[in-house]
Image (cartoon, rainbow, N blue to C red):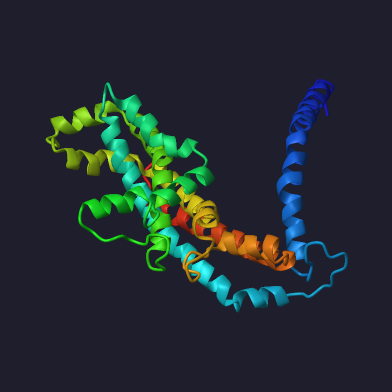
Length: 300
């Protein structure tokens, strides 16, 4: 090695060490907050540990076998998928429609952005309490309006067939504002020259412009919105804990609420760890499949 190359190599090594030193605190924080708890969770899943118990034993895969044969867990998984199947298309399609309409506004655009984004800024626990009052069969405003219109009272939260769809509507209400902002950002990035060129080419209809220009160029934004919305929908817990507590008849039992009951109500920490790992694995696989399938159809 030449003499001139030695200082350059030392400088390059010093830059690497300096960069690693700056990144080290964030890396240690990432390990402490994410990696280490996940490893502890995985270790606990192979034991019979219960919260507060000093001793525990190694049970191997018994907890996993119990989880996949547990009727409550299977029902919570089905309910979660049912909830996602309603919230995901509902919040994405409605947010896209609202974003297109708001984007065309000039003077009142800021007003509508604030109105639709307010549910995102509010605490979902507090809003769930408000929704519980609004949906009350005798005191709620919604049933009062139905009675005024000549309809009978609707047991939104006490009917097993209506409880989960009702929570899904609340979930859509809470997600539309955030997804609308993302779609508005995507719409703002589309060059106006493309619309002018399409008008010259004879594409004058608004629906045709949307299908040929707007929708294809919103592909990356739509992909991001779908993945983030599905993850958020899978994390349903707040409204269930406040409004239904898994009822009626287990119709609103979802995975996170089942994990909460096992870990903090029945104190079966090891079994709750298994359910958590299964839930995380399922969400990751679902998100990866979504990303790869939709990415092939996305125009960048």
